[in-house]
Image 1 (cartoon, rainbow, N blue to C red):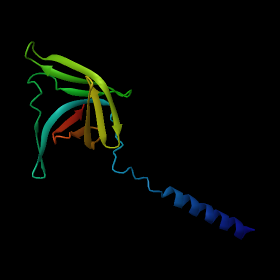
Image 2 (image 1 turned 120 degrees about the vertical axis):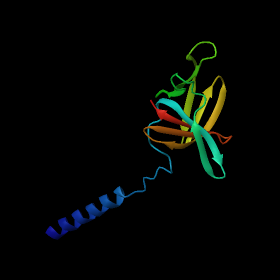
Image 3 (image 1 turned 135 degrees about the vertical axis):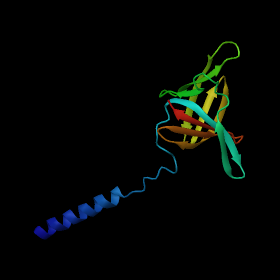
Image 4 (image 1 turned 180 degrees about the vertical axis):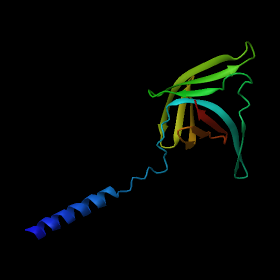
Amino acid sequence: MKNRIKLFALLLSLGLVSTSCNNDDNEGETLAPLAGKWNVSQVGTTVNGQEVLVDAPQNESGCDKDYLDLNADNTLEEGDYDSTLAPCAIYTKEGIYSRSHNNLTTVVDGVSTTKDIMNLSLTELKLKGADGAIVVYVKD
């Protein structure tokens, strides 16, 4: 009887170990949360296989940074600071977004845009558009 109990315990242990070792690969998809306010930090492109990024020229000097605010309910707000008419005037557009694996699709003013999520961490979101343009955002 003791041998049967030991054998049962051994088989149970092996079963637990083998099921806990399943491949939980997320197929390259990052699991960091996407929702939050992301400030534009850098922009650039790829030249000869190398990323070339510069500080975002669209950020108005002396103003807060332009941003992309992604809400948990899949709505978004884009904020653009512009001093053309008034110092640091904020212009916003609202829309929706969705995520499919490593793609972020936004719809703003009826225009749908899909970008590749190149990097997503707790502090950085890097997107690449179909035209090759790269935008790096940092979490507010």
